[in-house]
Image (cartoon, rainbow, N blue to C red; front, side):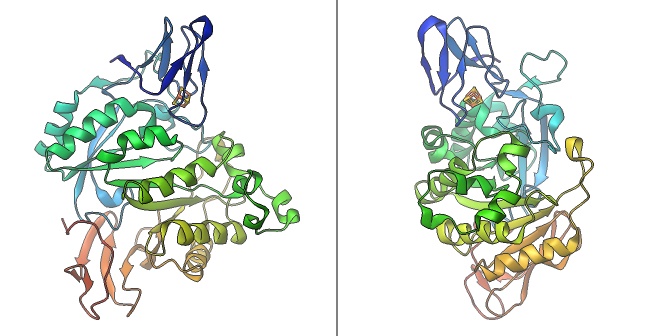
Amino acid sequence: MKHEALFYNSEDDKKVSCYLCPHRCVIADGKLGYCGVRKNIDGKLYSMIYGRISSACADAIEKKPLYHFHPGSYTFSIGSLGCNMRCKHCQNWQIAHSRADNGDRDTSYISPEELVNLSLENKCSGISWTYNEPTIWIEYAIDGARLAKENGQYTVFVTNGYIEPEALDAIGPYLDAYRVDIKGFDNYREDDVPETDIKVSEELQDSRHCFYRDVANVKSVRPILDAAIRAKSKWDMHVEIITNVVPGYNDDNEELHEIAGWIVQNLGDETPWHISRFQPYLDLSHVPSTPISTLETARKIGVEEGLKYVYTGNVPGHKWENTYCHSCGEMLIERVGFGVKTFEIKDGMCTKCGTSIPIVGGFG
Ligand code: SF4
């Protein structure tokens, strides 16, 4: 459904400028923005995907992945079309790389009211905007999230984090959890940050891929980091970070140290960090799967930097998919696939030693 967009300015010659995400597209009359779903029609910008659902499913919250947020609950998960990144290995490319003017994509309109009813009917505890980038259909996300909150449901963004502050502030009052990718850290050093923030040698810097530029086709990680801080500090969202470790692209130990160190310093040492296994796909089909040993090294790096909860992902049955008390080491949440097998946290504390464990919401 067509819906006038938020976050745009009118320009000369019937052009519009969109400031929903850091691409800040200037769009001529009749054209779509980079995300492929926001269209200039006669000098006004429209979302072409308001309520246009390409995928909907009741998922375990662990599948997002969110491990410290309503564990064991189900979340009504929806996606639409388009994305403001073009990741070469996107698992959801059929919808994410699709444009709103592609007539061959199956979508159905679901109003915000129907969305909330569907979540309740499917016995879900909340709604997740996932599968494609939530930011690019923010008009629908705001309306749906507001209604979800009024009906006692939680709300989740599974996001690449490429959003401008004004837009984050608009959804902020209605969003409970923010699961964001930090795909790499290289471009952070190339921004206008003070020299003191640059930790690695120039030689190493030169030898690296710039993940965001080379793989996701965006300029910098900087707006993503700023938005993650804003989500937590201004809007008190529960934040979990994921890094999909791609061999040869972002598996450098020093880069992983930087990501983990940044999380500790800016989001806190209780922020869960998921290090997930890359599987060859799409334009990165030639790249091998991430060795398990690399993920284990990355986990060790996260712990060395001070993170208390570092998880491996996409390795079913691995012991680092479970939650352990950071104080006594007791296994507190045992996960099997996306299910929770045991849950040994009571009143927010380790049942063995009484240490406080940061989990939002109860079990189930
Ligand atoms: S949301 Fe879409 S149209 Fe707007 S700036 Fe980002 S890519 Fe461009």
